[in-house]
Length: 420
Image (cartoon, one colour):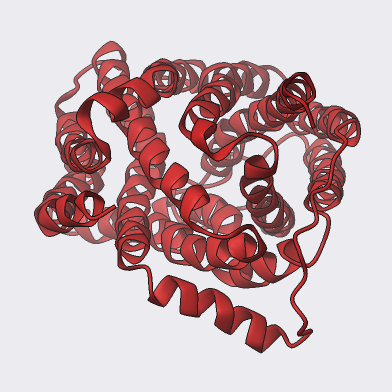
């Protein structure tokens, strides 16, 4: 493939990713906000995003095996089709249940609708696991390895425009107008992404090993990770960070409603403002990493997360909260650029799906734990303090965790990256 062909393929790949992430951004608000319309119980509100993230724990390893055995482009196409069908079904289920009964403090008065949405969220989350693993292992086949930081930074900026800037604001607007419409629009968006991905040409099937024994194949991935201590460290740090991040994300849903008095549109705009910081981080990440060095960038971005977590409960307005989230997302994108680019560069292509899936099992498998832990923290805190204070306790816990994470990681990150 020549440079012009690579550029065209990357453009299609990026645009398809942008569209699917716009759909994800819409869903980010819609799933959680719809859960809060069906229940005011913090644990019930957390169950919907748990259903979306639990598949990372359940299916990350199978996704890696499948990714290393199949054409990664075709796997992406299949999973986007699955999500298109699931969102269409969600739209029909919500439409058929209108009008919604008033939310209650404990449980939900619409258990059939709530249960159906949980099942569909699981389907969407499962397809996302296979799709994202395939997409992350496909990128090194499109761009040269020495351009991965630049390609990842630009790709994540486009993804963030959809996932965290336009998507949440659009989702918030739609759900305040017609509750089922965001799901229907998402279905159409995933079909558009399928059309784009189907136009990408090239070889995206890795070299097969001689064995068809999945245990042996998985063992090869585990052996590689076992012999890569820096990769192990990054996986553990990312998992702990994701746990804390998900505690904060789900806690925001009730915090912005009850403590800050924001509606769905205000919530979406706060998330969108945070995305502007992430987009900026993605655009300059390669230069920041080059200037600071990989190890220093990873160190300081980890510390910045802890500072952002503690700042959230002190943000007394939507504008202040938006500024905090913007700074948080800026530093988070730089961390991701360091971590993912290193992973894509060091892992051989024929092992990339398996090692990537093991890594993401550690890194993303902690997300549902964080979501549930957030709800549990609020529920337990309410027994000894006001609900207003209880709703900010997940931020305090996340800040303490982020501080410990920084202390734990500081020297190992310096030592690991200096040895490269």
